[in-house]
Image (tube, rainbow, N blue to C red; front, side, top):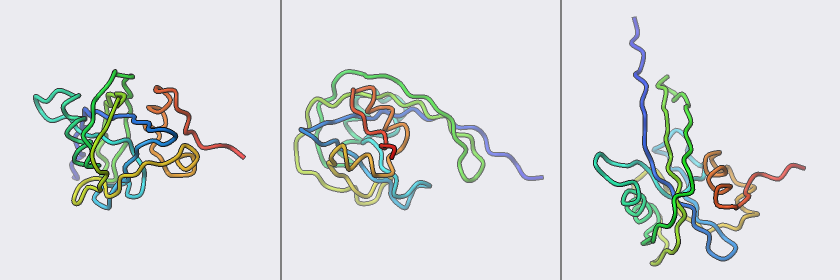
Length: 148
């Protein structure tokens, strides 16, 4: 009899950063189940780590930028089933990013493979993860795909 995977809960922190008329996004790498999908910079909170510290670390890992974290915008909680049948409960703490400095660069060997500032119109035509669309809405930024 096949053993069923145990459910997993994951705590993560993500940041919304708008610079002029662009937003910062990262693309999921081939190491993920959702390669090519665009996310907010951020990721998993390690045991004992404060979510804001996790976000600072993740932004630097994924984009090369050093960020100043702003206000907490909200929390997004959802459940999805992974390909192997595991139920994943994601709890995402969403923050604004007040400022970022440094040179934008891509993560070499992680869950993302490209970091980019994109216009809102570009974002509307990209495969952006639903949680990222929700998070942008918390910041008053509408990147929901336009309906024709």
